Length: 378
Image (cartoon, rainbow, N blue to C red):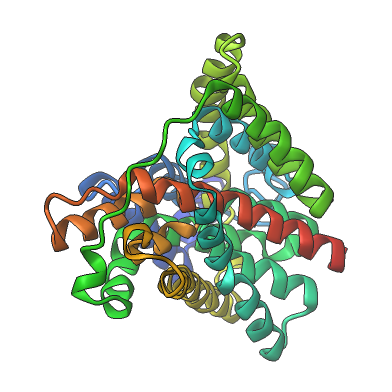
C-alpha cells in the first residue's frame, strides 16, 4: 500500500493544477490551428506539442530532473540554446540561404517601409516603461512588434532572460496569426482605390548585385548597430552562400536540414518553457497584450508610411500601401497577406513580388532595432 500511495503521489493526476489544464488546452489550440488552418505549422506544431510536454504535471523539487527549469534535465540542456541565444543566429543563417533580395535591390526605397514597420517596437517600449517594466524588460517586450521570433528570443536572452518564455510564445503566436490580425488593419487604413494601385514590375538584378548586397549589407548594418552582428552576420552569410553559386551544398544544408533541426528543438523547448507553475503570471498576460499592440502598431506604421511616400511620387511610381503591412518580418506570411488583400481588390493585381521587398527589409530592420537597444541597455 505504501508503494501504491507513493506511485499516486508522483503521478500527474496528483499534481495537476488548473494552470496545467489551461496550458494543455492552449497547446491543443496551437496544434489545431497549425493542422486545420495551416497557420505557420512548422512553428505551431513543435510549440504546441512542447506546451503539452511542459505541462504534464509532476512532483516538483523531488529531484527527478524532468522539468525544463530543473538543472540536469534533458529539456534544460536543450533550453540552454534559447537562454544563451544560440538558436536564433542559426535560424537567421537558414533564412539568409532561402531569401532572394532581388526585389529589394531593384527598388531600394521599399526598405523604408521595413524601417517604418518597426514603429511598434519603440512605442511599445515606451508603453512598457510606463507600466513599470525595467528598461531591458521593456525593450525585450517591444521587439515582439517586429513579428520576428528569433530576434525576440535573442534580445530577451541578453536583456531579460527571466521573461524569455512569454516573450517567445507571444512573438511566435503573432507571427502565426498574421492572416487574422493584419487584414482588418489593412482594410481600415486604406481606401478601395489605394488597394488597386498597380506597381511597376521590378527591374532585372544582376548576379554581381546579388553577391555585393550581403557583403555591403553586413558592413552597413554592422557599423550602424554592432549588436545586430550575431543575427545579421549569419543572415547575410547565408545569403552569400546562396547567391555565390559556388557553395550550393552549404546553402542547401543551411536552408534545409540545419534550419529544420533548429526549428524543431527551438519550438519544442520554447513551448515547454510555458510550464504553468512558472509561466502563468499577471506579468506574462500583460506581455501578451503589449505584444499584440506592438504588432498592430507596426503593421499600421508600414501602411501609413507607404501612404505618406505616395504624396511625393508620380502616379506611375506610386506604392500600393498594402505592401507596407509586409514591413513586419513575418516572412513570408505578411507578404502573402498583402497579396491576398490586393487580389480581393483587383483579381489581376499581384503584389507578392513587391511585398517581399519590405518583408525582408523588416527582417533586417528588426535585427538592427534589437542591436540598437542592446547598445543602449546592456
